Image (tube, rainbow, N blue to C red; front, top):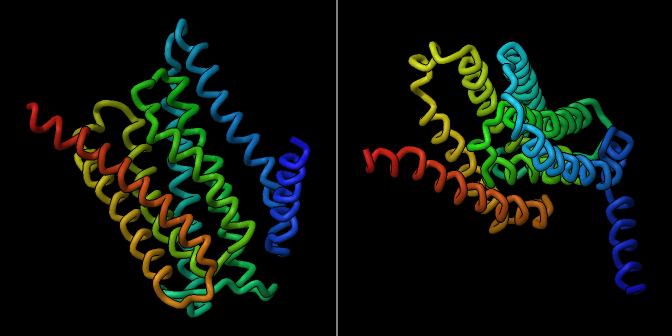
Length: 263
C-alpha cells in the first residue's frame, strides 16, 4: 500500500513539474486536481440534480438558453478567429507543426487561445446543467456525459503540455463546428415555431462526425510520419477520437436511419 501511494505521489509530482512553464501559472492548469474536482462535481450535479428534479416541474429557461447559446457562438467565433489568424501569421503547417515554447508574442497568443478553448469546455458543462433543470433526461445519454466530461481532461493536458503546435488544428475545426452548433441551439431555444427553420439538424450531426474523422486521419498521419510533436499526445487523441466516431455513428444510426426504417 505504501509503495502504491508513493508511486501515485511520484506520478503526480512528475505531472506538476513537466508542464509548459508559460501556461503553468494560468488558472486551472498547474495541477490536475482542479479539473478532477470539476469533473466529480459535474457527475454529482447530474445525479443529485436528476433526483431533485423528479418531483419538480421543469424550469422554463428560454431567455437564459438564448443568451447562453449565442454567447457561446460569440466565444467560438473569437477562438476560431484567434486559431486561424495566429496559425496563419506563424506559418503553421497543417500536416506537422511542433510546439513553439518560446515567450515571443505569436506563440503566447496561440497558447492563450488554447487556454480559452480548454476553459470553454468547462463552460460547456452548463449544457448538461440546463438539461437537468429542464428535465430533458432523454438528452442525458452516455455519449453526452462522456463527451463533455472527458473533453476537459483532454484539453487540460493540451494546455499543460502542448499549448500550440499541432493542437491548433483540433481547436480550429472544433470552434468552427461549434459556431454552427450553438447557432442551432440558440435558434431552437426560441420555441417550436422555429422548428421549420431547423431542418439541418441531421447535417449538424454529419458535420460533427466529419470533424472527428478529420482528427482521426490527421493524428494517424502524424503517428506514421516523422514529426516533432509528442507521439503520446497524438496516440491519446487518435484513441479518443475513435471512441467518438463509434458513439456518434451509433447516435446517427439510431436517430436517423433506424427511425426512418421503422417509419
